[in-house]
Amino acid sequence: MTCNELYPSHIAKLRERYEESIGLLNSQDVGIEAVLVHSGSLVKYFADDLDMPFRPHAHFRHWLPVHRPEQMILLVPGERPTYFRVQPQTFWSDGRIPLEPWWANEFEIVDLGRPEDILDHLPSVRRIAFLGRNTSFAAKIGLPSILFNEKHLRNRLDHHRSLKTEYEVELIRASNRIAGLGHAAARTAFFEGKSEQEVHRSYLNACGALDADMPYPTIVAFDERASILHYQHKRIEDGKNSRLMLIDAGFTQRGYASDITRTYVRANAPPVVHELLRRVTGLKDLIISEIFPGVQFNDLNQQAHGEVTRILSDLEIVRGEEEELLEIKISDLFFPHGLGHLLGIQVHDVSGLFIDETGALEPPPHEHKSLRLTRRLEEGMVYTIEPGIYFIPHLLDLEENAAKRMFLNKEAVDELIPWGGVRIEDNLVLRGDRAENLTTEAMI
Image (cartoon, rainbow, N blue to C red; front, side, top):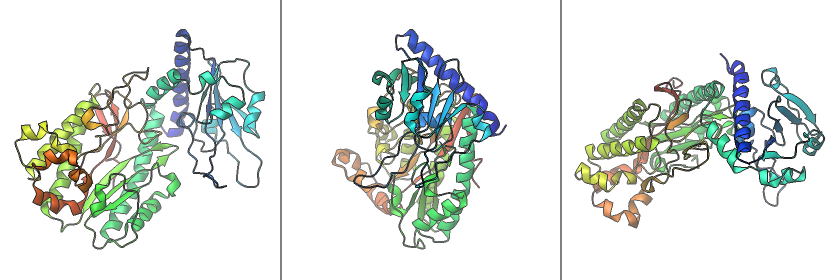
C-alpha cells in the first residue's frame, strides 16, 4: 500500500491512543475533556524583523503533513478530529494551504483568518489540554494553564510515538531512499576531488532538495574533521588531496527523517585505515544481527564497546590484556557517543530513555552518558545503529584520561589522528523477530 493509502489507519491509531490516554488520565483524576494541538508560531531573531526557520511542533506533525505556523487540531473523544486551517490574508507571504484529499478527508475542516478566531469554534468543555510551545497563545484563548503540555498526557504520547504505524515506517523508508541518492552523489563528488561545500551541494541536488528539507545540517567532514562528531562547517578548498570523507546526512519526507552515515577512503590509504572501515562496518552488521524484541539497548551498546576494544587491540592501536582494557573502558576514548537512538519525526526521537508510558526514566550508564536509547526494543520501533572509532586529540589529551594513555600505542594513534575517524549508520525497524534495514535497501 502507498503512504496515502496507509494514512487513514495511521489517523485511526492516533485517535485511539489519544482517547485511551484521556480516559486513563481521567480515571486518575487528571481531568482532560479535549486536546488542542498547535503547530507553533514564528519567532524572530533578536532585534530583527527576520523570522527564524520554522519547524512544526512534533505532536502536530504526527497528525498532519502541513508545515505552517498557527495551525491547530482539536481532538474531542468520540468525535472526528477538527483541523483549523489558518490562512492569514497578507501580501507579505503565501498563506494558502491546499487541501489534499488523502489527508483532508480524515478531518472536519474549519477555515480561520486569524488564530484567535478559534474562540468561536471551541467546544463548551472547560478542560482542554494544550500541546505546543506557544503557551502564551493558549492563555490568550482561555485554556487552563494547568493543562499546558500536561506532563502525564505528554509522557504517554511521547512513548506512543516510538511505536510507528505502517504509514510512518513507509515515510522513513522513502526518506532513506531519497537520501540514498544523495549519498551516491556525495561519494562520487568526493572521489572526484570536490570540496566539502561541493559535496554538500551534490547531495542536495541528487535529492532534489534545499537545506530546509534536511532533518539536520549535513555533516561533510574530510580527514581530521571526521573526528568532530557534529562537524558544522563546510570548507571551500578543493578535496583533491583529501584522503577520507565522513558524511552524515538524511532527508525528510512529510516530516519523517532518515539519518545515514557513511565513510569513504581513497585506495592509497594505509591498510590500517581500510581495515578500520571494514571492521566498523562489520560491527554495525553484527549488532543488527543480534537485535530481537525485548533486547535491552544498553546491552547492545555494551556489546559494541566490547567489539570496539577488540578491534583496537587487533589493530595494535592499544596494548594490553583484553580483560584489563575492558575494565578501564579504553573504548570510551575512541567511541564517545551512543550506539544509536530512536528515529522519526525528530532525528533523536523522544522517549528513548523511558521505562514505560508514565515517563519514568532509565538514564544512560554513567560511563556512557551520551547514549540516547536505553529501552528494551519493541516491534514497530525505528532506530539507528551507528558504531564509530575516532581519533580525537581533545579526548585523548584530557587529564581525566591520563591513566588510559599508558595503554595507547602512541605511534599508531599519532599516525591515525590526521584520518579523523570512521562511522557507519543505518536505520532499522523492528518487525516480528528481526530488524529490517531501511538503509541498505536504499543505498546505491
